[in-house]
Length: 277
Length: 306
Image 1 (tube, rainbow over the protein chains, first blue to last red):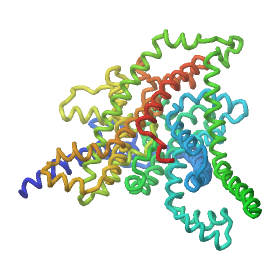
Image 2 (cartoon, rainbow over the protein chains, first blue to last red):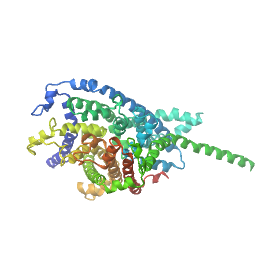
Image 3 (cartoon, rainbow over the protein chains, first blue to last red):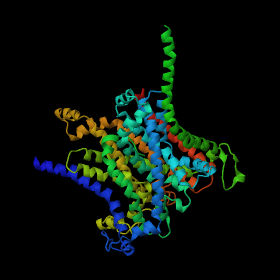
Image 4 (cartoon, helix red, strand yellow):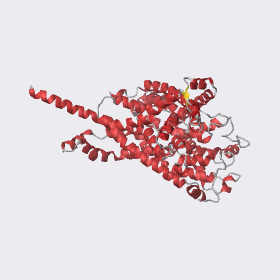
């Protein structure tokens, strides 16, 4: 019986888990290893599985020579600005959806859902044309505006859930004590909503940090590139510098992976089937 | 009598005032959607009936259904559609299957469960471009690790150019996207599994169900809604996905990995024949709208809102 148990644990738990973990980690490990190798080490045969000699040269090359410091800053600007506005919009709309009964609620939810189905590539031409007409093409603002529009719907639904979780009686009590409805929201709801806002913010940040298609279409000047565009351009070069590319990839993944570490527990416990595209 | 008469209009007024608030709160998102989604889509519909090319403006003009006819009678679109169907089919099937296996594994109680969960879900946070870079480093004929590993195991004898070989390009892409897409299913299914009441399994045990039977008769039926939801959403996601393919193969070699979405993105970013590109967008949009309707019917989304 005991032997059978052990065998079961090995074949139904540890073996598959380890195989899957290797599958998940291999690309990440390989990028880290490549980023720490010298140019000779990268090309060396037989393959160097562990970097030797070990160097940080590629990181400084990616950060300085390949301009990742600039792309990092641009990505940060777009992401933070978008996340701020998304959270403001989502709190307002989420509050309306959580606390009011009104005509058109289902219509709004339907609209939110439909947005998930719109192929982003469809929007490329008309949005490019529109931004071109108002002189916004090539600016980070144009990317941020699109990111806000594409990401707020899901975040609004999420925020609605968080607001529903805060008892309305607390707001009523504040109103009895002389608070206006708005005052009640600011003093009661917002402070209690902080964990929800952080989660929503982290969630939308990952999506926007990774945005590629519209940035590629709108940003033509290298001084405005975001990280995904910088990576793409490096990869498309005639003579790809793989060490610096791998270092760039590690820099690019650092922030989303850290945010993910914060979100991951919540992902399974709270979000359930809630969906990130 | 008089008192109620005066009270009623006041009440109505108060009610009206209160009812205006949600609309004001929803105004900013609705405006955003009107400006950056509804208007552009209308614009695409209009443009699809025109010859519109910013580089050759002297040719611009109304074209009727000309663009649509050109797309439907040409081979480019249908070839891309075939690639799209293969792409979506394999991604959804493989991601779902592996996602379900992972969810079942992580739904067991054991030490280090949290550790494995965090580890296995990491690719969820990665972008398409980043995934393309990571897998490029794996597949690369000169510096990659895949050839070396496969040669060590004895599966191949000489190194292959996985991405530029027409017969391996699409499978290579499918594997890379699988890596990134599995956590979506694993997360959703695991969450749904954790909300299945344990009494159901206890009752099953009393009835003598073994592990396999309780999976088929308890877990899967309980997950039905999540499965329908995630597979449909993922179908749409994968149909629309551009980033990874665009960065890893760009649609090549010889169009073997050009999906409809890649064709669309190439139309927008590389060609200036906007009328033709718009007509293709309209066709995609209609295909996905049909999907959306089916999706709404199956999941009956929003019904509980009443």
